[in-house]
Amino acid sequence: MSVIEQQNTLKHSRFAYDDQAYVIHMLTSNESTFLTNAYIIETQSALVVVDTMMINSDAMQLRQHMDKLNKPLLAVIITHGHPDHYNGTDIIIKGFDKVPVISTQGVRNCIKDTLDSKEIKWKPYFGDDWPDHKVLPNQLVKDGEYLTLDGLIYRFRDLGAAESSSDLFFTLGEKQSTVFVGDVVFNQMHGFMNDGNSAQWLTVLAQLSSELADVEQLFTGHGAPGNSYQLIQTQIEYISDYRKTLCSFIPNGSSLSDGTLLTDKQKKSFEELIQDKYPDHQLTSFIKAGIDAITQELILESMGSKGCLTTDL
Image (cartoon, rainbow, N blue to C red; front, side):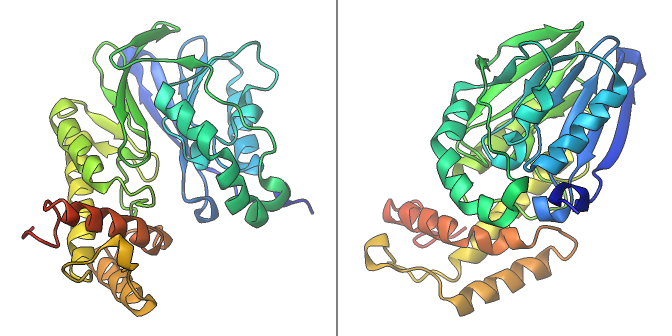
């Protein structure tokens, strides 16, 4: 049996916005590929895909859902440069004529600059299920730009660094009833902290808390959709807790030059504290994965007299 035949089926959820003539299909991978969401936005005459999964088998199942809908593909939108959101693009666009792959310059740069390192890290684990060919965004949008695809308006915002080194969000329709934020907001999932942008991520979330307060439904990169304001506030709380708890393990006066990072015992204790605080959250492997990056970030902040090691939180 091939690797692809062994993969679990993507979970499919459907959200209809009949008054605005579009349907959102949410496809979710299994935990081995981080419970990642990809989306098919279905309008009267066409489809737009948002993010494209990490491995061949997941991308092929996403493509099968598209094929069942039997409508042309107008575009693919990539929310950020982590491979569970862009790796499958080649499978998604194959056979369609000149499909634009839409994102920002920052997201394109992030993908291009990390292709080799992601391949080295993940191909040994996924083997032949890791895509050989990656497609970079080929239509770049700027902050505040909007596009109309099959009569539906897509309004884009370039957020810069947040969860990743470059993130975007976009809203749909005249009413802007829905928003897609990629991994800037998780829902009932431990956050991916490895890029070490937690302070900037909090700044972006504070901005979104105001900007998206009236948007009814927020669609995440990991986890179920929900109320925009509530999900953003919960994400702020999680990142703040992660940072504050981690600060308690770092000695005052630590610097990167002295190699001060947490011991394995300290990391285990930290993981347990975060799990106790968020017992229902999934993707527990993300807790430990981000420790070193955020420790370094917090030490650098403290050296500038702005961090938790020198001031109270």
